[in-house]
Amino acid sequence: MQYQNDVQPITDRHLRGRLRAVGILLGLMAALVVLSGCGNLRDQPKLAKPFDASPTFGRAARNILPEAVAVNSQRGDEHLYYGTVNGDYATTYPFPVTLEVLQRGKTQYEVFCTPCHGYSGYGDGIVSLEGFPRPASFHTDDLRTAPPGRIIQAMVVGKNAMYSYATRVQPEDRWAIAAYIQALQFSQYAEVDALPVALQEQLAALAAEAKEASRDNVSQ
Ligand code: HEC
Image (cartoon, rainbow, N blue to C red):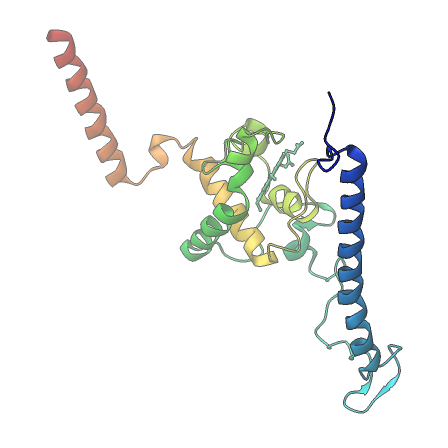
């Protein structure tokens, strides 16, 4: 087929030429933006080295505050911070566990731990259900009989796929969470006799009701 002289077909060569022109233009615009910043920064007053004298603060680097604690530095109270006593899992709490502590533990557990461990601690959190390595349930014999220090250590150093929570969960909160997990463990394995009498009576009433309902169903 013949093309007329004034109607040129658009070939790959033309397209490449256009693209190159656009590329060069964009490059120039980017260079303009970058270069315009340079002059400004170059003219700003600045201190080149950390220990240069500074008119405002004495020297360029600020002094470290006296209460600053380096990450991972030994903090003295092994029981509170690491959940261990002479290197073994602590079996006791470093402060009394009150209702308030448990309530704090509940909110913190729900913030930090439920995504993987689930609200009741069966390891069925949403992240686990979506394919993250599923943690063991807290209601296995192994973990139900574990001392609270083992829960604290899991938070402080992490375990396999579970990363450390040491920088996110403060020491007191770690113990509050451990107390709440132990309460969860108790809740899933409590003997009826361990319940307050009022609850035992409610349970008995519920059981009687259920029995009545099933008899009605059978007789119908
Ligand atoms: C990103 C998911 C994830 C989150 C969030 C998470 N864990 Fe875990 N956790 C795991 C996994 C996975 C394991 C199992 C590790 C293994 O044994 O391989 C585990 C194991 C544990 C264990 C058992 C440790 C042992 O000694 O067997 C405890 C206790 C625990 N987690 C507590 C917590 C607490 C408390 C929180 C919240 C502060 C938390 N986890 C948050 C994933 C998570």
